[in-house]
Image (tube, rainbow, N blue to C red; front, top):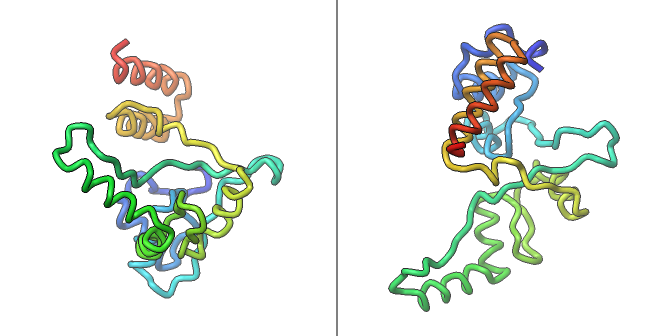
Length: 177
């Protein structure tokens, strides 16, 4: 994919890349749903959409999902009953809809509709059961940063053998093997 990116992609910061995209200087960004609010903040009038990476066959396309917001009651909480009441209140369709309207992401609460039209194609696939849990959902703390570093080195030197060795060493380091 780097062969099709801008020539100095490694010299561009995240905010700079968002602004370039929002101002029409780049055609697309390979990111997740979290990018949309940042782009629309930079250019509220931008005509932008979000789509999953297509599979080789269209019918095999899936949406990678991950839980971004999870609310739970600590076993050590001194206010378990109050917390449970809050979760019950928040889990009603009406209140979950208010949260979805404000936050924009799809909800797991039945009959709650996502308020972000740019996510419609993703939600349609999820409603069809065409989703998978992304790998980072299973990783230990620190793995995302480590993987980012390994990929950064691959982009710079394009050495696949070194990349695989770095990746293997990173996994062993994070998982203390």
